[in-house]
Length: 517
Ligand SMILES: Cc1cc2nc3c(=O)[nH]c(=O)nc-3n(C[C@H](O)[C@H](O)[C@H](O)COP(=O)(O)OP(=O)(O)OC[C@H]3O[C@@H](n4cnc5c(N)ncnc54)[C@H](O)[C@@H]3O)c2cc1C
Image: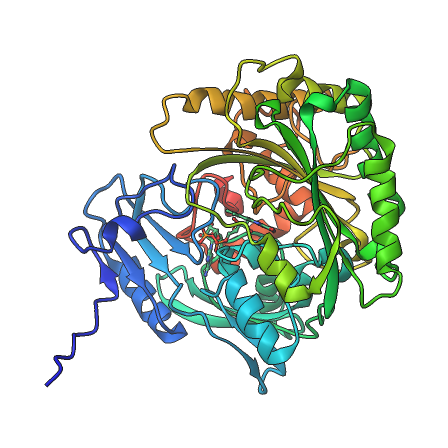
């Protein structure tokens, strides 16, 4: 007779084989030592387990935080900090289905981009316009206003969010599951829905389910290209022209009903030690103008510089090497999405972000040129040091909508990234590179891309950066909360006071109840 193994415990403590894996996420910089990790399989289980967790007395007064994890891709230590007592892991809740009662697609909070593309799309023909890395979890991704290669065509994931279910802790420590809808008659519940349209994860409670209405149908086929130029061929004039052409193309094409307005481009400025600068672009070719749009885009960007385009030879930041796409290729949308899936290995990483509203000015370009190894950091050797510039706007900037994702007139979104292996003795050097590079790009505005100033509009909460709270790196007159949320922060604080009055869900850059700010 076959022996049936007992169901493994949903509570993982020190000594359990799973504990080392479940005490960390994607970014290997952050490893927690929680009393336990609580895996949860249903909204009811979340409610009961959270009620139990908030009644417990911490064994260690230095570890008191309760945190929540979906895909584990948080850049900072918001989930796996030293002060964490309990991690709620919602990843067992990863179903996606049409819910006739809600007349909406239900997405459980532990699902990932992979589930959205590989499960939701084949069954329904619909997609979330989210990120291309399959392992990113939707619990954090959506709540921060997740975007991806379909976003210039269709907008942000949160633009389709109809409802959210959250387990919240009241003033008396009682726990309830709240269903909050976009058209909720109750203003407090409607405000809770709104706070999940860009307010960021880990702030108000444990999200168990999302519902989406009118999700878009991605194109059947797209044209995808990936090419590179060798750094050795670049003069400063070429570099300036490349950044100017890329910026002005997206500045000039902001109508999502046109093929050019749907086209998504990613420029990957590696440090010179990598050897190459990369470019990726995708456009809908169900639209008959798609081929022309790609041709014109490449003529504008590649055609404006003297270095000759070649094939990609190396991975670029989080992007895989796509060596076979120098000549644009038509492929099914899902195949293209799989081609660009760049989750890669789990490493240590540090990240920074910027929303850009108009093409770069010459001082910003000069600073990037210098810090990418042309004038400063000339002996630097970390090949995974990148300034990634994504196209943005178009459908994202369609007016007017009431979401907490407030940056709605940007044309580009920047992501500074550096990666290394845990215990690399040169970690301090890598951190210095990213901090100095970012700080000098935005030197005219206190080292950060201030909201509503010049050509910048703050930072992306899904690319959190604790340096924004540090006066050595943020010398502007805007706090971290203004940089992420612009003028929406006081409204988020009111939601916090109503739905998490005890500040159970907190981290160094979480929304604070007004009395604690
Ligand atoms: C390789 C990589 C690629 C990326 N690509 C993109 C991209 O293309 N587009 C883009 O927009 N972003 C991208 N991101 C950023 C990504 O959107 C954020 O890191 C996102 O917050 C990750 O969500 P997660 O659930 O995986 O992370 P987690 O670490 O699990 O959570 C992130 C935050 O959300 C909170 N949270 C998670 N689940 C819940 C829940 N159920 N209830 C309440 N709070 C919760 C956590 O407490 C934490 O504060 C990328 C990140 C990585 C590492």
